[in-house]
Length: 189
Image 1 (cartoon, rainbow, N blue to C red):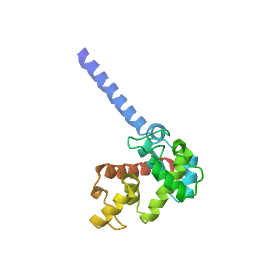
Image 2: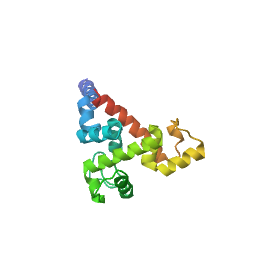
Image 3: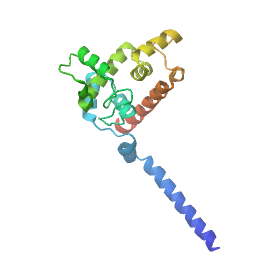
Image 4: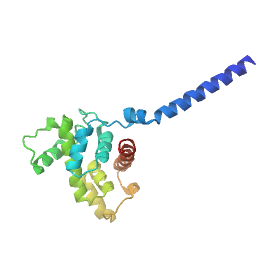
């Protein structure tokens, strides 16, 4: 009898802990602090709006690329918050008339966001505002996306994420678009 009472009390405690954990995890405070943080908001808004890019999309790209770690460096050599390849950044610097750029500046959040949003805007213009194609190009390369468009007959109204041939790019596009929705819900009020 005493064992049964103890088991019931344990079941109640486990249930309370699970409910408390669920409510905490799904609370706006927890989501903002741990799951969808938004550091560098001012810089992101400034450059995203300057380059006519959605700031929530920019935040989602940063979350997917570096988890907001400004000194992040990938195995392939992409660096900074927005994980730009140095050669791409040099091209952006040249195209945007950014004087005195050197690769180490990509670790500076402001430079990374400035260049990353400029590059997103360039892709947005190239792919006629199609966010699936823009994100696929940001992750998998604009040349690959152009090749896929030609090879598979995709048009500017392509939105079938599942048809993207690279799994990494497919997952990336899905992850960024989902994160952008969460950023809009949490910060767009």
